[in-house]
Image (cartoon, rainbow, N blue to C red; front, side, top):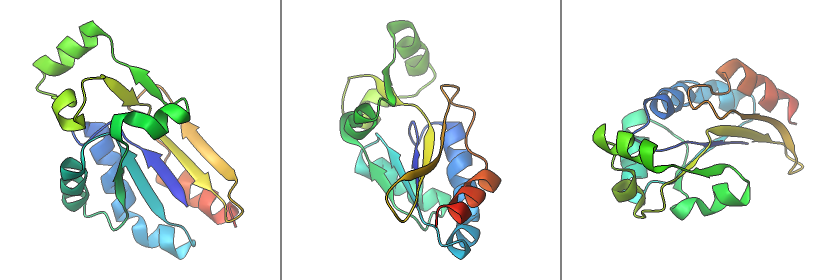
Length: 143
C-alpha cells in the first residue's frame, strides 16, 4: 500500500504526480499494490481532483491537516507566502475550509503487508516526488 500526501488540488506538481499515479495504476496493482492519496482540501475538491485525474484510487480529505500534523508532515505558511499564494489565485483557506494556513509536505510512504513502512519519500521541495519506478520497486519489496 502506498500512501501519498498532496498539498492540494490547486498544486500543479500534485496534479502531475496524481496523473502519473493514475497512469501507473495497472502496474501498481500488478505488483500487488494499492494507492491512497491524502490532501487537506474539502471533499468537494478532492472528488473533483480524483475525477479529473482519472484516479482509480481513493483521494481522501485530511481536514485541518490533522493526520499530516500527527506525522510531523504539516507546516504553517507565513504571511508573505500567504499573500503571494492568494495573489496567484490560490484560495487555500476556502478550499481547505479553514484559515489555519497549514500545508502538508508532499510525501509518499509504502507500507508492507505487516504494517511497517518499507519505503518513504519526504522532501520539503514540493516539486520533488517519489518516482513511479521507485514506488513500484518499493511495492515489489514490501511483500
